[in-house]
Image (cartoon, rainbow, N blue to C red; front, side):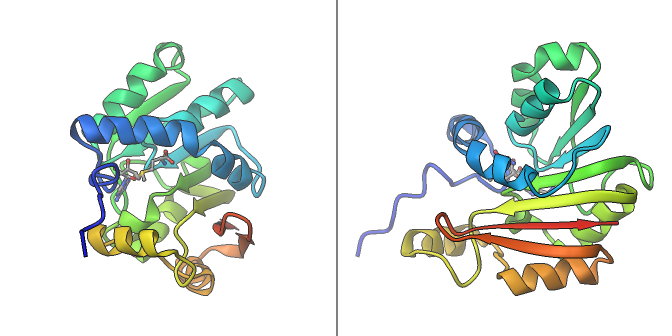
Length: 207
Ligand SMILES: C[S@@+](CC[C@H](N)C(=O)[O-])C[C@H]1O[C@@H](n2cnc3c(N)ncnc32)[C@H](O)[C@@H]1O
């Protein structure tokens, strides 16, 4: 059997090089419906953090929709930070949006710094999901909201998705596992919604 072609996702865990650039630009375009579904689950506050922001389309959309919001994106990939900053130059120059190279579980932000934290299609790659979620809870203000939206769902993947998960060593929780992780991280009001047509998961919770 021939090995599937993974070249368009090879660096998904930390985008780099030409293939990584193509991938994050494609995700900027293609994750729009997943982002929109995710944001239907939480209110967006005044100070917002995107963990694993890639090329930054989610924060660009929020900058356009919420003129009062103060927005921060973080990603472990230098290419993602550089690309997101370049694509959002006008908001960055205006001081409304910034992109930083850092990631969970070590975020360089004060306790309670954000009203809203979200993460789209990133949790599979974190070195320790529970520690990452605890760190997100730490930087959330009391009463603040967290949302993560995922299209690779444990126990619900097709053959190609399973091959990608194995090749990239991704950890894809089931719906129940995701709820357990958020609860173990100390969140309240944990809810995990499933979208049957695309087989997406969205977990939302508050501090
Ligand atoms: C599949 S991409 C998704 C990018 C973007 N959220 C989107 O939907 O277009 C996953 C991103 O998570 C980032 N990432 C992986 N591990 C991370 C960590 N521990 N902390 C923060 N970001 C991380 C990767 O560098 C990559 O940019």
